[in-house]
Length: 127
Image 1 (cartoon, rainbow, N blue to C red):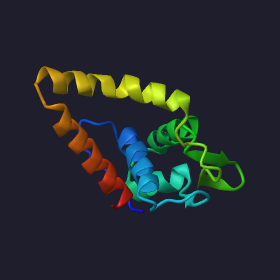
Image 2: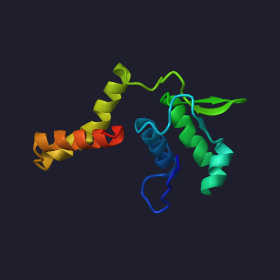
Image 3: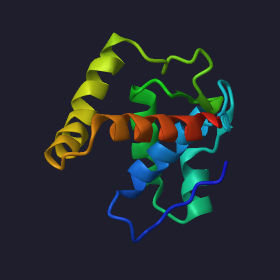
């Protein structure tokens, strides 16, 4: 999986890394147990400070997407600890609420919103 970092984007670089790794998992490009580059290696490969990569990896670790072993390196969590649970569903509700609120304020029909979500979800799953 090749990361595409856009230095001109408003989104912070560390979040671009987080989102692209999660997208790689969603698209089955990254599978449980797959190795990821070390913090220093990835930083050097894409030309950014390794502290930025470390911040991204720490977020991914907190969310259960990766494991970081001192000897073995960084891997996609082999037990798929990142799968949806009740806590994730609650977080998802909080995160998407502003998007839903804005769509409602703009009078976007619910069916259009459902269609958009379904289309994007299917794109991630390659359907």
